[in-house]
Length: 212
Image (cartoon, rainbow, N blue to C red; front, side, top):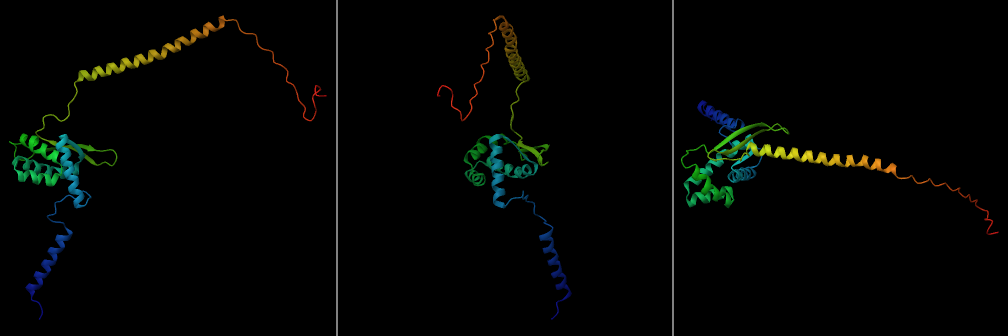
């Protein structure tokens, strides 16, 4: 029995949906980063641990955008504070020190913030391969990099200039002593030149006169 018109339309519709699902990648938002699933999970977990430890890290823009959801999920677990949340974070990050700092230090600072715990700052392209670079940091961090005051920088410059002048003076002193030594040498009486002695020729095959 031949299939009806409705069955043919349904079959062609299923084929079209399967084609769209496999070719057009609808609803597949995972950024692969050129890595396998295990490698990608380990990379993102290590990046989050580094972010917890150093408060700010420099990486490529694609990795920073991939790290942000995981980092904010970990902060949400830290704000929960239960044993189950701590074990879930430890199963993802695999580092006890990072989990302890996350629950004790970072999560309490973001207690009044409902999401948006991280910030991405674009840095432009790096020279080697022109990859877009970025900083990712915590929004509630007080001060990431301690900038030294300008007075200390100026004092260091002055010390460097003083050292360079001292080195130049030390180089000039031996140069000034050398002409003085050269002036003292002509005062001494020159030694008489030694007269060159005539060389004795020896003829092979002939005995000297003393042996005769």
